[in-house]
Amino acid sequence: MDPAHDKNKDNTSTTETKIHDLYNLIHSQRCCMMTTRCAESGRLVSRAMAPCPPDPETPADLWFFANNQTQKFQELDHDPNVNLAFNNPATAEWASISGKAKVINDRNKIKQLYTPDLKAWFGDLHDGVHDGSADDPRISLIYVEGETVHQTLKGASMPVQIWRITKAMWSGEPPKISVCQELDNEELQHARNVHNLESAIVD
View: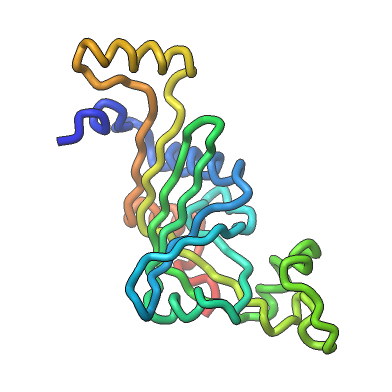
């Protein structure tokens, strides 16, 4: 039993509303924590990653640029299951997306999503090949297709939250201070189908 979660769970919002809420939360953040599983030890490993701008219709499906010479590619090859965690400390809102990752090396897709500022993160090795451009062979895309989403949104102003928490301390009744939403795989797939998006965008 989790009375605090039950008190704040959103049982009325439509799938479209929850997807819109997820888009707004992700769109306002510049990075998230991507968690993978280490192939050797089995331990969970997280690192900050900056996603490409999300699609408003399918914000749980995200693209990331990454250096394919790094350890996370071995981890994804061993186990494609990942978690993406977004957090807004100013509002205490957060979202957790669990899904599967796929490494994409399609150069046309890379060029489509590439932006010049990415060069700063890859650097130019001055060998005529590894120059941080869209043609740099070190650059790959990681595509994460969301399977489930858990998110908590701001449900009241800070003064109201404090008052409700204080009241809960002596009433024994969990406070209503947030909006807890969930999206399951069926809802996420329905959103893709409605907008004619393939579950695997690039093979």
